[in-house]
Length: 382
Image (cartoon, rainbow, N blue to C red; front, side):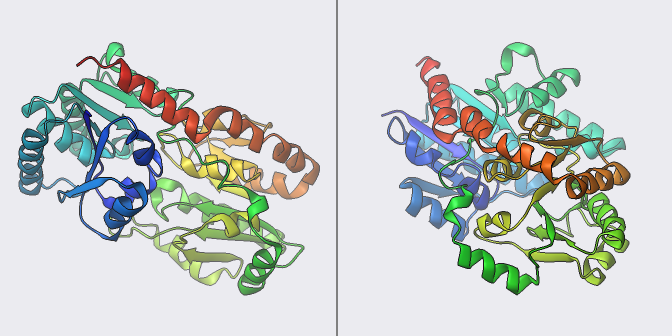
């Protein structure tokens, strides 16, 4: 059986971004998962039934550590002789594609699920652009996970059109539509959670899920909600996700508002987001940049209308006034106006709900995406 090696920088990405896909692919290939060490890597071994291998990688530019990772991957590839190396996440892509090219791996695929460099400026931007082009040169195929991202890559001349392919309708892993179903959250769980968070039956609950960082639009979201909550006492904002202050800090005034506004509820990382989605009315996701946002897939699949920025991925899942609202990026006033609209027009909100779940099932069901990736693998020549 031919070997397929999948690589992410950190093990939580290997576990979460590709959940279920490793097990599916292991029916057709010998699959090996590679990332840094941690509990999440052990979960991948157990839940996906695949072999794993540890190579520590950093998420920032660290030349000596990066060269060490390249060497470790190179020696691993030389001993394993994989047919395909498929990388996800930026650093894993750069070191993985270089090591795979040096080791003579015939098929080197890298999935692009967002471009952090788009928010960089000056010399840092020039360096990141150069690294991006280098990564693409080392790969045999680049897989942007949205059509908008494919266009951005072409606009920036990172590579040529013949090296790019979008899988299906977009997305890296699709969505488990049976898992993300509001009907699976029992009424007593919802009631208890509302009591715990002091959410009343009259409250309209906006939810954000993701990293609580600047790039996800949290500064604008908190600013918009602060203004909204002054004139709407029956609304709440749930912030679900981890802090990454060391990588992408929020403004001090944003941090103050999160602490002092009693209508903002920051609940941190949650292993199961479904109860929080089930007690919410609208997903607010004003991110600056995405590849193909799983959160919007999940929220929409659980029948939430979504307010999203007009960026690739988001504007492919959401159609304005059909299953959500699309607003300009980095525009707190437009975000506040959209949130007020969702409060003022419950009948419009209800119409969006009816257009949410079926749209996701028809376009982004996990098994469809997995089979599209498998079809691509099977076109690769020995």
